[in-house]
Length: 279
Image (tube, rainbow, N blue to C red; front, side, top):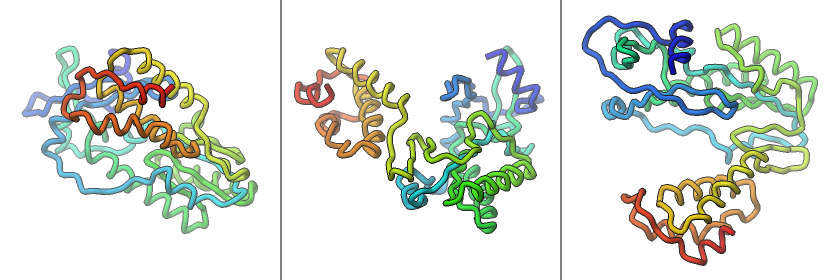
């Protein structure tokens, strides 16, 4: 944590704050898919006072209507995406933390703020619309852009245009996670999309994770509702890419629906039919 705090201070993401009335929240780390750690504010208490307008992010169900047969694909990932958006001086006192007796405040949009996804998506969707007006076929999910075209050569030109536009506007691009050379298949929103064979499949790492989580549950004589909900969520997501996937865990869902949802840490014995279905 000390190393991360020092890095965030050097990047001006965190600054020392003057002693004044403050809203203090804890900061913690969660692992990212690339193995690095992402700082998250536990802003649950602050979010109780924040009004959030309803909005909808795109999801994997929209991608099939975006893609065309034999599309070439690229994707662009933004680096430290939320940290590109500055917080006004007057609001930073609500985004403070204490680390080793030092009062610090966030200078930019933190993960964990309930309004952050909408605020960020408004901006990235605005950029996507600018590019669409230049005939770029593009869709945005927070900090991930998916670009498609029937011609690999034209797609490469559109990728170059997108990168130059983003960099002109001050965005930093995560070149390691981006796919900048046209491909016949690309992983986006946790699904491998292949418009050449009209296929969508789970990435291998997700398959391994699902098998591991299901096995862990089956090894236990009794499990918590929270663990079962986690497994049901993984299998529900997987069912999008697995033919008749929902049939593989419907007994689990029925069992979950029969349990009291407010006692997520209580232990329950899974019925044998549920175990057989998951085996």
